[in-house]
Image 1 (cartoon, rainbow, N blue to C red):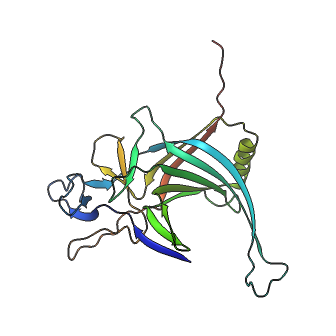
Image 2: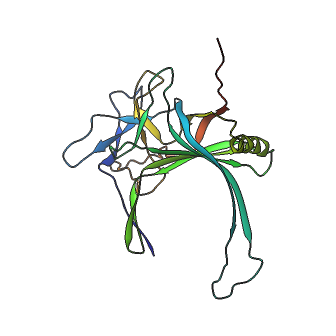
Image 3: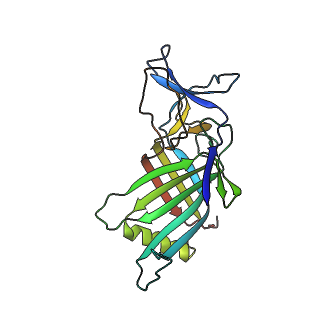
Length: 243
């Protein structure tokens, strides 16, 4: 038996109309605890964010599901899937140090980032990237409580020929570093700045439990995790050269 329990939010997330600085941003999100309101106002952040790989693996799976335990049969449908799974961490860039991340409504630093690369069914389809994540929550599995930590994952769908080229390089260990850059990530927020870099990103997931409070009579379709507008994946082999 699996039972979902409450997510771990420390503060409420509140929508605020911005009258004073409306020319810069019409609205913002703030965090509010029982005894105070944060002075930080978060707005959608569109500039580039940088990650590097800690580990990469090629996964090739085959799965068969029997529709009935009472009537096992031969020839059950078989599913096959291939993916490249990359554990990521925020990376410093020439403009700034590595960015830190936390979920809106929490002060915890997110430490789990990953990239899952999958092949499109054919080369005529456009490549695309999505992002999703979850605020830490508890699950009760067979009466034992398990905590799922905050995480962010990117899912990148690429042309089959590129996917198998990357898979071959990972299998033959001809890659020494992987870098991943994203921009215009829906659901990424930060405080307003004239700079194109930020030291901290707040994340708003798609989860309905990751709720935002609105003033009476106001409703806005807020950017939440999903679309990634820009992405740049580089798999390199670094060698030392004599000088």
